[in-house]
Image (cartoon, rainbow, N blue to C red; front, side, top):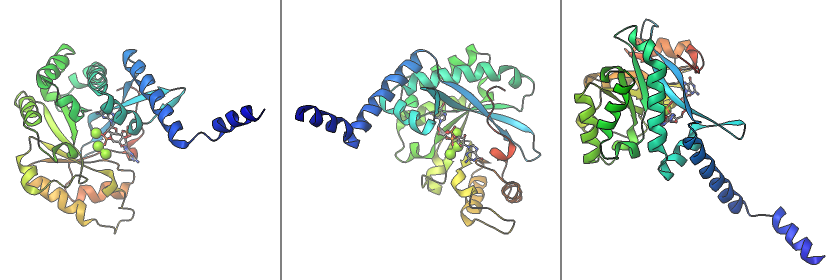
Length: 265
Ligand code: C2E
Ligand code: MG
Ligand code: MG
Ligand code: MG
């Protein structure tokens, strides 16, 4: 009797750390199966030019785990830690090219943006494999934008720079995602193989009224333009934010103001 109580008590008062470990290994296992089964697929968020035309779609990975959507903030870091991101990234790129093909073909000014993690770029032949993948889907390099986070360049890596440079030579554009969160200096930014920056939404959501201003946003747009980089603002939810950004010369806007993410293009 005493033994059973003890056992029950152990189960009931399972230390939170143990629970977290079990949850983590379940996540790892499920994620591996999801990648094997091609269960993770992209949805699409539109990117608007200054006139409001949709000129780009960004592919964002989605995964339904145990009946509920599992946020990318959970499964992307896990995929990076386990190395699954390499195969997952390949699947997202392939599927996105297939989904966007017809839409891209309608107008030469249109592009598709796909997020890539540092671990993917660290692979041997990342540039060559990426070009082979998109060509197989009929998408040309000048229609593709790869988004890499600013954090990737905190310690610039020779191989990463070389792969991204090779892609740019082929016509692929590189965008610095979550710009402003990684403390890139003017000098660093100038030396990086990038064509565009995406202002992180944490800066945009400070703008709430027509009189609000953000010295950070203003100087980041000015800095990017000085370097000849195109600027997209992400997380635009309110018209005042769009108006403010357009007044500063921001080239493109993206966010829930323009609707929700769509399952198809
Ligand atoms: P990100 O690339 O900066 O993507 C933008 C995130 O902001 C998306 O979250 C999007 O749904 C969200 N968002 C867009 N507009 C708004 C808005 O107006 N308001 C608010 N509050 N949020 C908005 P999501 O889909 O949860 O993705 C989170 C991050 O996960 C992405 O940030 C990206 O870094 C990463 N991620 C997503 N898909 C992939 C992928 O296929 N590969 C890799 N390596 N990373 C991915
Ligand atoms: Mg992105
Ligand atoms: Mg972003
Ligand atoms: Mg972001």
